[in-house]
Amino acid sequence: MICLTLSESTIAACVEKVRQEREYIDMAELRLDFLTKEECAKAKDFPSLVDLPCIVTNRRVSDGGRCQLSERARRAQLLDALDGGFKYIDIEEDLKRGELDEKAERKGVRIIRSLHDFNGVPDDIFSRIQQLRSRADVAKVAVTPRGIADVITLFNAQKELEGIDKIIIGMGPYGVCTRILYKRMGSMLTFASDSETAPGQISARDLKTLYRADQVDDKTAVYGIIGHGVLKSSSPKIHNPGFRGIKYNAVFVPFEVDSVRHFFALAEHLKMRGFAVTVPFKIDVLSYCGNITREVKQIGACNTVVRTPGLWKGINTDYYGFLAPILKYIESGRIKSALVIGAGGASNAIVWALRNRGVRVTILNRTLERAQRIAALNICQYDRLENAKAYEGQVDLVVQTTTVGMDGWENPVEGFEFTGREICYDIVYRPRMTKFLSDAAAKGCQLHFGDEMLIAQGMLQFEAFTGYHYPRSVKIDLS
Image (tube, rainbow, N blue to C red; front, side, top):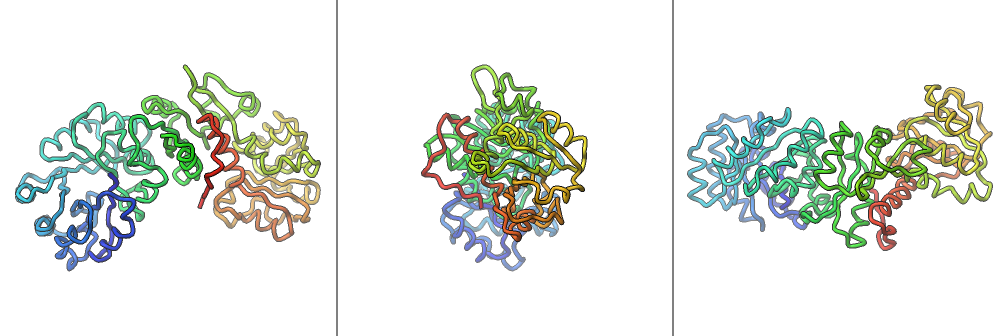
């Protein structure tokens, strides 16, 4: 089940929110701590105003909520709400059995006992869950994994706690994958919110339509993307619709990763079929690949890992993805020379792709040593970024490979005078129109955008993952 956590301040607003989100949700959690005092008195009416089962809770500040009332007053609000038709009440771990439990039992309301830990994952989490279950109908833990090792612990819950009614939530960036793959932990539901009432929450719409989290089962093939900051990645918007387009029971999930070694252990646990790799792990994953393609050997970086019989195979689709929008210009002779700005992980593949097609390349970078290393591997020129003006009017293609443009208002070659005949290509895809491209457009340059490369390399990854071409019937929407 997908349960919508309501953070509105009035009952009327909560009812309206449920109406708006109804097609994506199976339950709703009414948070009394978000309601005004006057509206709390109306809480018992809420279940009769919506057409789905409801949970009521009144979260203390220490448990991530907003209620600052005395314990007596807080419990009184919950007791009053139990006169309505709620199906569940959520009570904290440390509350002794009392009138809340007794009234809930008389009313036929199922009791959830919950533990919240915003600092980590308790070492004795499984025994804590068993203790919670002994005092309630459902045990709930919302904990904060500090790395992939903690995430593995949470996914072990299904095996360790088989047969126990439970809700397990990993909060924060490392826990996002647990919210999507909640059924793989044996969790009865996952919480959704577009206002992030708890760290790492995902909107109900994304859980239902993008990830189809409520349809994940033991046969669902798991794919993903690993790296830093991947929660904002658009890759799930490419692969998940593609899977649906070929009627493949699979899901593509973002994994925030701190340790490649631990992630490969998680990948084995989840029996993952493959994953995309972004910064900073495009080189680190090579140690775990038993087979790599020619492109990976030449470039020295891998952006795609696929499971094959007995081993993991490393692939690089950045190479072909980058070339796809401009290959016709290279083949026609329109592009013979290029300026590549930046010497980070992405520039390895880009410089090699251009040199492999016979384009003369000069790499510009703030740190000369990094540019020199890539230039030596690809037999091309390099220079300091501060000398960019020396190349004005000298090249056919200018490629921006740094992350500078992601803020939308900075150009790494500020002051560079475009002549208008250059083809300008920025691999940043959010925002689509970067300051670099905006400056180039003002001079009449032809533009190519980062989403072109992202989609092209994503389609190639899709083929590596599934063995099928990306379905033509699926329109990719990265918005």
